[in-house]
Image (cartoon, rainbow, N blue to C red; front, side, top):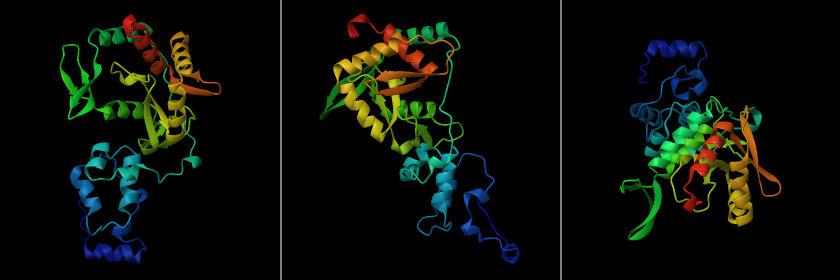
Length: 265
């Protein structure tokens, strides 16, 4: 993305009333490749910030899926994912996905249950959660892995920066979305058991989940629901709230819960 502008071109642009290069906006660009580390550094140009609108440029690249979460974290730019968008002015369609082959899906989950990965607590100066494979190996419990999977599952098409809340169905910047486990104290590691909720709905869901009868009824409703040819499914929780799933996501949860060893239900 290195740009060298000849003085004659600079003068021509000025005569044609084009804005200076350092004042360009994202809409002025026609760039469709994922940014590299060098390109991020060029746009940042710290500490001088040659590009006046560098935050708008980086935020827009992130919105369009051209700036990775890893680079955001590396350069301490996570704040760019926390807003700056007027989602009320857009109309997004909630993700939907039918269950194309239930038998194949069930077989996939069956294979996962053959080598289950447990979530365990290991004392390392302090108690931390880790995951343990079926053969006893232990690995760090990376919550960002499941988080990213679910955020991408419920992102509006074409918008890498947003994610739907499965309770209020409002698309929010990913930084304002929490990923909650439907189980209160999960024993096994399955990314599919997570749901995406905005900050407000997350707090409401956690309160509902703490109630044994409400949580158990919610889980039973998930297991008992008969999926036909729909693409999305609503499951009630409590007296007045629902969680919306893609049909495929719900089917995956159903198979995990149904195939869970009886002694661990």
